[in-house]
Image (cartoon, rainbow, N blue to C red; front, side, top):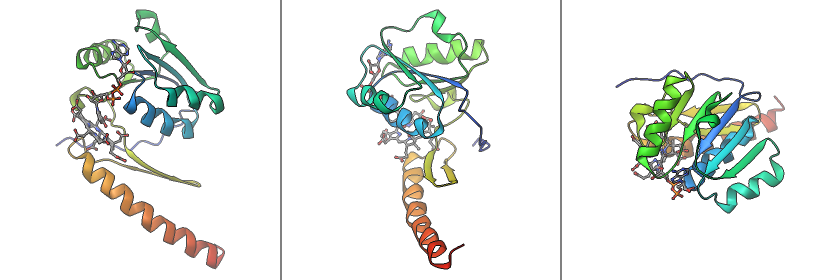
Amino acid sequence: MKKYFPLFIDISEKNVLVVGGGNIAFRRINILTDFNPFIKVIARKVDKRIVDLKITYKKMEIFERELCEDDFKDVDIILAATDDKKINQNIADEAKKRNIIVNDCSYKDNCDFYFPGIINKDSLVIGVCASGTNHKLVAETVELIKGKIENIFKDKGKNNV
Ligand SMILES: C[C@@]1(CC(=O)O)c2cc3[nH]c(cc4nc(cc5[nH]c(cc(n2)[C@H]1CCC(=O)O)[C@@](C)(CC(=O)O)[C@@H]5CCC(=O)O)C(CC(=O)O)=C4CCC(=O)O)c(CCC(=O)O)c3CC(=O)O
Ligand SMILES: NC(=O)C1=CN([C@@H]2O[C@H](COP(=O)(O)OP(=O)(O)OC[C@H]3O[C@@H](n4cnc5c(N)ncnc54)[C@H](O)[C@@H]3O)[C@@H](O)[C@H]2O)C=CC1
């Protein structure tokens, strides 16, 4: 098993390209907005939940069309999140050629980084990862930590620390 290092990076000036506009794209964009990057979404069909996010999240552009070569320009991070494994594979290949960091939601071996389960409360950001082996373990761990975190914050409130 290969373990990935949890790198906490500033993405607020980074350009993130999300290819795909369905459930997974929505779930991930929704989380990314908490970290304030520039987001460009390209998909054949973009879910209304993503379009609605744009009402409050201004650093996002949405295009309902096929991906083209030029879309890789000036991109820092790519999320391949279509339901077409071949397209995701092509995106991963193109990204690697250009040294762009890529995540492929349909094939872990293509991922330069994994999308973690995230707990985000005040200044505390916790990312949970099972090294690509077990997303259910990630979900369970996230729920467990969320419960514990509430207790810590309650206690902090009481003690005024
Ligand atoms: C390796 C990784 C790469 C990455 O995507 O970054 C990856 C890969 C894959 N997931 C697949 C399937 C599902 N993953 C989920 C859920 C989550 N998956 C997440 C992360 C990751 N998933 C990365 C690291 C995982 C780790 O650390 O072990 C979470 C943490 C974060 C998030 O997705 O936001 C979130 C849980 C947390 C939460 O719920 O809070 C569900 C359930 C659901 O969607 O409700 C299903 C569908 C049900 C099923 O199939 O069991 C498939 C098969 C796709 C196919 O069949 O084509 C692959 C591809 C492969 O394994 O190669
Ligand atoms: N890593 C993870 O956590 C998980 C990964 N998956 C994987 O994610 C894939 C996507 O799942 P959902 O988002 O639920 O699917 P979905 O059907 O909701 O969305 C698919 C999106 O891909 C777009 N698309 C398809 N072909 C395209 C193309 N050639 N160019 C641009 N956009 C294109 C569609 O227009 C749509 O917006 C699944 O097929 C599965 O392989 C699924 C669950 C969890």
